[in-house]
Amino acid sequence: MKRFNLLKRLFHLVFKLKYSGSYLGILWSFFNPIIMAVIFTIVFKYILKIQVENFPLFLFSGIVAWNFLSANLINSCFTFIKNHEIIQKIKFDYEMLLMAEIIVNTIIFAINLLILTLFSFVSGVKISLIIFLIHFPLMLIMLLLLSYSFGLILASITVFIRDIPHFTEIFLTIWLYVSPVFYVPSMIPDKIMTFLIYNPVFYPLIAIRKIFYQKDFAGDNWNIFWINLGVIIGIFVLSIIVYKKTEKHFPEYV
Image (cartoon, rainbow, N blue to C red; front, side, top):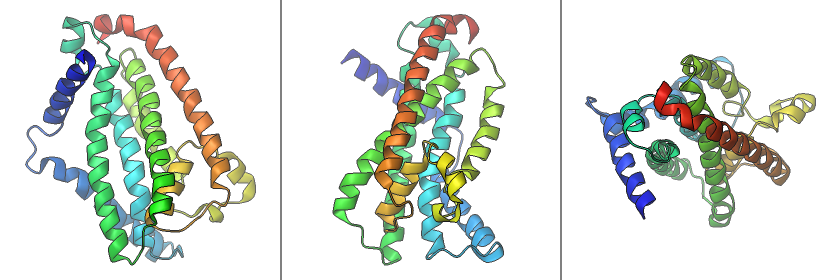
């Protein structure tokens, strides 16, 4: 109960700080994926001539999932250093600051999923309840665990190396283009696909499109799921090791 109450307080603090001084506040979180989808639809469909049925829906579904992950990772870099006053004054489980950040972004993700559901309905897609119940929980758990694990590593290392946020932005840009956000996996040669399926965001992107776009782009989804899950668990174990080895030094270095 004590942890829950602390997490609730941290959530309110993070949410308040995230949108303080902003006129539109949380609305920016909805404009971003919509604007990205419009711009990339123009570039990829009308300039690069990528032939994918209902490309705006295809693209928007991928961007919603990707933005959730990338927002968590970018925010996580600053989680400990921007809360240095709390860390220096109070001894608690610092990782709860990261959890609060992720909860805020999860609420935004949920609202974006409602917009995606409406987009699917308007596009004539009938969302299957069975497919939703199978793939949505798995997609969400994997995105949350990946966000927490990678985020904990980034947050911990940034305390000591302040260049990490800049490297993270570059890394996310590269990661975006090797993930099936803008393209269909079938476009990728088999030799390259052999390596790309180890990308831990591969299954979540397949799953969100299977739910809201009703298209299956990857054949053996479960093989990709187990591979991705194994990679994510490996990152999670690494994150715990990094955090446990560094947390005692946070009050000194933040």
